[in-house]
Amino acid sequence: MSRAHFSLRRLVALGGLLVAAGAVSFVLWAEYAAPAMRQAARGQTVPVQGDSTPATIQRGAYLARLGNCMQCHTSRGGPAYGGGAPLTTPFGTVYSSNLTPDPATGLGGWTSEDFWRALHHGERPDGTVLSPAFPYTSFTRIDRADADALFAYLQTLPPVTASRPAHQLRWPLGSQTALNAWRLLHFSPADTSIDTHQPESVSSPPSARRGAYLVQGLGHCAECHTPRNALGGLRSSAAWSGAVLPDGQWYAPALNDAGEAGLSAWATEDIATLLTRGQHGTAFVSGPMAEVVRNSTQYLSPDDARSVALYLQTLNNGATASSAGETRTSSPAYPAGARIYDNQCAQCHGKQGEGQDDAYPALAGNRAVRMANTNNLVLAVLHGGYGPSTPAKPQPFGMPPYQLTLSDADLVSVLNHIRSSWGNQAAPVTEFDINKIRNAPTR
Image (cartoon, rainbow, N blue to C red; front, side):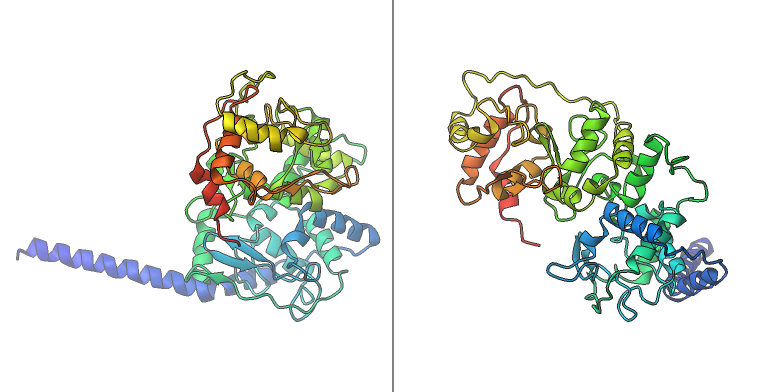
């Protein structure tokens, strides 16, 4: 063996040792040094304790609704904000924390500084990193005043002693090493030092700037409407372009595409009505978005609803919705589906798919009908459902489930009839599209 070849082998071996040493150093830093360093840094900050006046607590209650905190932090049948609700992710199940002021299992031992760092930095009081299933990647945009008001409200809740179950994540994804590595790739705290969202005065008009603050931060809308990479990080280059939710079924449509859920062509007041009422004319929300309206956006103040609407109008990426006619073809392409539609659907949705104003959605020109991703359409027909109950619409009309009434072949026929009639032009649904939803495991 030549001297040069031997030297090269030694260099390769040395490089391997250096890489291994670096990996071990990172693991030790992530598991032990990083939390301690962050906790030491916390001790150097000056806590900004929020007041607990009735006005602050009332504002915190409003913010908790806008953030939809109770939905994720309340287990089914459990006490409000008591935690323990399972959150399904592609990497396993994460359980939400107890937000009540119980000193043993909740936030009773926390300060407003602790709460601020959880929202802004994604860290517990001891410096350990929270799972990004808690959307601190969005909540980092919440300013300190709003964080303090939210904390003041949570401290008024009845204490609930309830420890959350241990997360069920594949090893080593729940370790501090993995969470710190994820943060290095996908997270940096937002700069909230400059006030860019609050109205200049109580009489200031709604603004897209205020709407951006609510949508990007407290509303954490990107967490559903933006696709993720293989590691679960939000793909900033594809912001608002739509994504399948972690349950693998419901699809959060693109907010920047007029062919899906883009709202650039809508009137501001119409968007605000949809968000606070759950419907506008023959347009309705359904599925997880119906839950968001029921638990969160229906409580938007009129000015905040208009601000959110103004911001959503700015998200269009230039795509336009395909046109939809009003006339049904005389010879439907799917005659069996046409018969099923006439027997099962026309009474509510209309002979020409025109819907009923303030009652049932139109199917002619309906973007949910024509989207390339058919998950929501199939789910609606298989499982049925109701719109959200709101003060303006306390008893919404509903749709019955057809999973026991129609076979996969029947559903293919009727859905393809709907997707190809009244000016709708969409690719055919297949029996596989139906089957994958019908037989999906319950989570």
